[in-house]
Image (tube, rainbow over all chains, first blue to last red; front, side, top):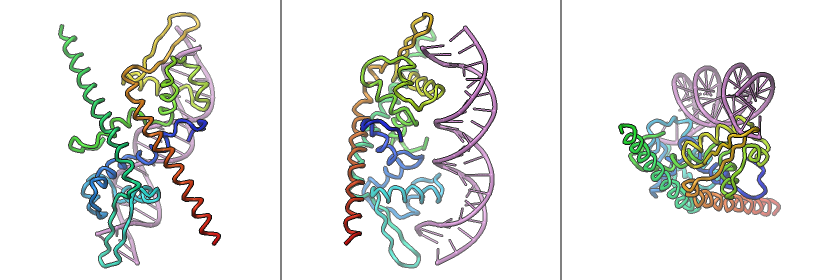
Length: 119
Length: 119
DNA sequence: CAGGATCCACGCTGATACTG
DNA sequence: CAGTATCAGCGTGGATCCTG
């Protein structure tokens, strides 16, 4: 993206995580159980078929997600996290923890503001 | 963003990191030294004044970055990372490390493909 | 020097309809 | 069931000009 001489490569990692629905998709797949296309749709009620497909393809291309097609009628396709994809788990968990702390901090600040305002 | 029952809060953390230039801005500020507006511009040659301002305001609002105005002519404004902002450092570093590994992995894969292709 | 204001382009995402 | 194709909207970021 930018030409930083070898430094800040968070951008690369973030490309694998960022996208309106990517984190949620990864979250569910990281539970370990392979999920069918429509199972994922049910878990992400607001995603469109199109976007789910696009994201899964992206993740598949990066070998973060594995796609297995069962040649049968009706078709069955299962998505699962790859071993390599598992390496994202601690990263996402860290982001998660920071996010939770950040929310809590904001909450405290706002409560504080309420208190001093009524003085 | 999405209504996940208390789980996956990476999204929150990512809002503090994501944005075309945010990682780079944070990277430079995390070096520790306060930087003036135009110093940052020089460090991010391709960013527009507008976007630098917008991102800095966002980061300031989240208390990740501190903005100090020296009332003088010509004006001088210094931006620095807050102590709270420092808590992002390990998170970004982890993303960076994953990114580097991811690039290396891709490189190896491509080299492998070249090799088997010419067989 | 450090911005603010305005206008504009493009890419991501969504909605909808169709298919092997 | 698991997609693909096409069209449309909107938000993020860019370009440019102006100012205390």
